[in-house]
Length: 261
Image: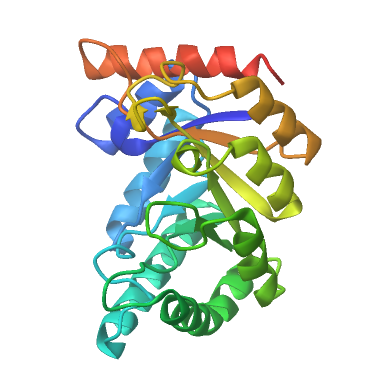
């Protein structure tokens, strides 16, 4: 199992500094946002290589402001373009996964419309991902969509593609489910995993991975049972006086969690 962190939660002002700190703190992987230009992508690739860390995944940047489920075709087109920018970023940086929030249910977007529109848009996008051998992954998040593991698996299975899978967020699911249950149901569909802390008593995220009440032993046992052995990527601010302290504490907490494997 590899240990990763999202770029924003690393200390440093430049990508070069951030990737170097990741390596110093024991992170072998760093997830990055979508990069819009070839120059940016080249810079990040070179910086990661120089620091000796890999980039396994890219987070799409437009799926909230311009979702694939929007009623306006122009907005959906903009969203597709953003996903293709994510794919270009992944291709240049050697990532095998792009994270996508596929739809957002809102007062003017019904559940059914979110499903139908996002499916149609993803069908347009998938050939490009298949050609680059990059997996487009669906994340569980607060978008009021795919609210059970049965729905998530049905949605993914509809596409019947090895290049469409699940990006599971352990913390996000705790508001309305148990992460170990979802992991067991997702099984082979599981491509990447985010981790963060959550306290079900206060119904709030925590700044510490171990500060809430997530059953990390059960989570790790479920991941092991389904054969997941890729990367766990921390997506939280961490606790501490400085950005360096926070990232160091995240790394230490992840080491404790990984002992369950």
